[in-house]
Length: 482
Image (cartoon, rainbow, N blue to C red; front, side):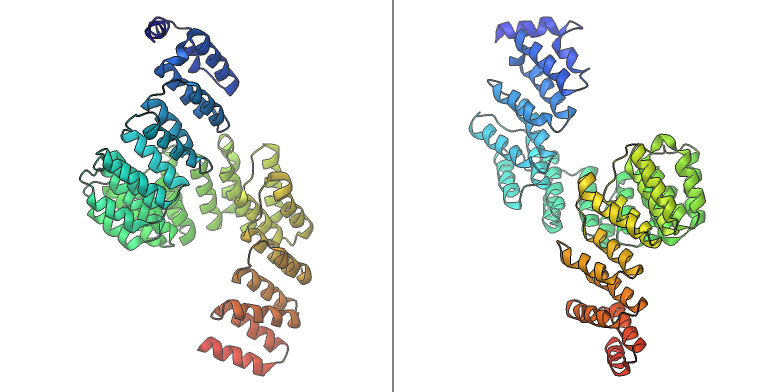
């Protein structure tokens, strides 16, 4: 080991060592070559280069974690830093978070090492990402045993773990018991309330904060947007501009969403000017929010102009989704399809939101053939399994064009239970196309599923009236009044 240390000291002064090569590795193959040199020089036995190798492997791609695990298993006496590196790597993925717990158990039982504050931070993160409540509570007991229950990093990770599960009462209990709290503690607890939509308690906590940073303001503004309180979100944004810290791109995304939903074009334009002055750097999400705001405020041509002007910010899917959705909203179905085809040419991978916007465009343009093709391509070409929103778009498309039988077959083939919106779309199509028999059958299904759904009762009443069945129409309207 002494010989290995002297080799490490001697080679660390060189500019062409395997250790320095790790900094320039761009792929897992290059990292493997540097690994081979670490083995031949014996440096792999030293914790510093071994830890650097593991970090390089874990950062290169998710596929390299298994290779990193093989490297870790070959290290004779891994120290706490090496264990922490591997635990953290697995904690980031919900599919492999259980490996973090396995490594933690190996660390405290097999190696005799004492976990430190970072170990618990990473394990709690793994519990929040994929493990259960029981495992998290067991880890909490270990933190108490080693005397880290009042460590601010550990308590913050514990608050975050409970918040990720939506257990805000447990998170608040840890928050209240914490001897040492920092601004990060307050922000995590604030995010926990916002995540569950409890804006009353979120605002109470926000008002209690002695110090607020841009994360605090952005979180509370985003929370109000999330629950549909757009005016409150804009009021807070204005207060932030007057008394708070300088907003960042996340703040502006929420503020633009509020403007879009309130159709306040002047406010949205002001934010756009604020961006153009260079106060905040434009990114893909801000661009998508601008396109969405202008589209919802009726300025689809200007939204398209911005989209085409920012060519360097179209590597990610969000601006494309906003533009396709904007065209769909304005009935410009062919433009939406052309945008999607251009997206394919530029090799931007679509996601589930892309297909919701695209199928809506097909629906508004009565493009049945195109809609069928895009719906079928989701799983076959992109590996995206349709969700209930996509089935709803197909039912709406087929219903608009009078293909009611096919629309009903789509509902029957769904792998999940149809909701009121899907049955309501079919019921509305039955009324438009005067299919009274099918409409009555759908209406009965809806009454059984959602007996208090007003909109569906109104549709059913209209169907009865159109077919001259006045008694049934009167009965349904009386139920609506009740």
